[in-house]
Amino acid sequence: MEKVLITGISGGQGRLLARRLLDSFEVCGVDRVAWEGRPKNVAVHQVDLRKRKFEDVFRTEQPTAVVHMGMVRHFRVSEQVRHDVNVRGTKQLLDHCVHYGIQKLVMISSSYVYGAAADNPFYMDEDSPLGATRSYPEMRDLVEVDTLTSAFIWKYPHIRTAVLRPVNVLGYYVHSMIGEYLRQRRVPTVMGFDPMMQFIHEEDVSEAIALTLQHGLQGVFNVVGPGAVPVSVAIREAGSTAWPMPEPLMRPLIDRLFRWGMVPYPAGAMDYIKYPVTLSGKRFVDATGFRPLFGLEEIFHSVRR
Image (tube, rainbow, N blue to C red; front, side):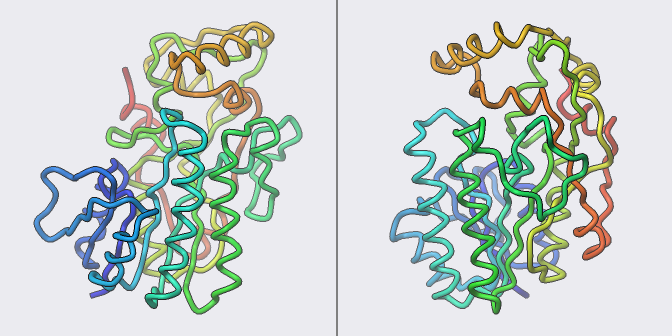
């Protein structure tokens, strides 16, 4: 059996993925926190991707495949720490993949790297430019990681490398920023705007990663769920109430509350509830036959208040 190393294995998505892969792969993982109650046949190493001990994991476990999802996606740490963990940690991982003969690499990016803008076309494909940093500088590190790995595909073609860009992920176990947004009792929205949004269930993300490994995909792929709905519908179906606010009032308020640690997202994130970011998942479906198992009703039920 192939052995898969999962970075960020102790997080919600990492645990789901590990359990999904156990029937077909040997599974090991690394994380900065422990996984209490993990399956006995899953080895978890509590290390930082930036440290020498991370290289020791490659040397001792000798994986043939790597799934990289061990990035900081929240803003509870400083921008410098977040950038260092995400960008330097990913550079270290890519170097280890080359030096230790990794055959397959899957990097989990995000639809957010495309950026939210008024001129976004509907259902963007993988060739669309990554414009997140134009109005959302806090996304710089994730765009850099995506770009680094995309370049790695062409530099080392003998390693089957895939970059997956899933749309908004919701579920019981995954702690995503969009999940925290929808779980608020009163959810702030930009008055006069109600863009379409796409969602995918956490279990379907694990299935997409498993298919990527099984098919040995190489390239960049959008991963989309069962459909798109206006943000107002998403808020209602999650059991919350929309709270429309004028943008000139809302943006400085969000900025101030973020700096005080009272909201989990910076003001730049507002553009994602103002402008549509919808993706085409045709390339991934053509390559794998992927079909989401969870419908929108089940997705929103997983985060319903």
